[in-house]
Image 1 (cartoon, rainbow, N blue to C red):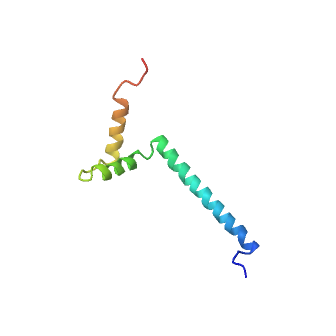
Image 2 (spheres, rainbow, N blue to C red):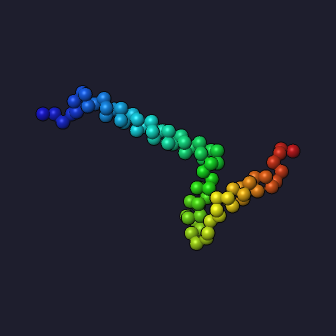
Length: 80
């Protein structure tokens, strides 16, 4: 007796593996898109605070947003 799956079981196993790879790719693509666009900035800020400033209280989401906006728009942002 062989331990190999029958031919009617192989199709669903391949489809399941394929859908798992597609789901992983989509999850990674979504994480990349959020990082590039800055959408995950607050989550990254919280992670930084947990890792490097454990005793300090982090800003709220609204405070962090205001801080980032002030940093972005408080200086001249042109080439000349």
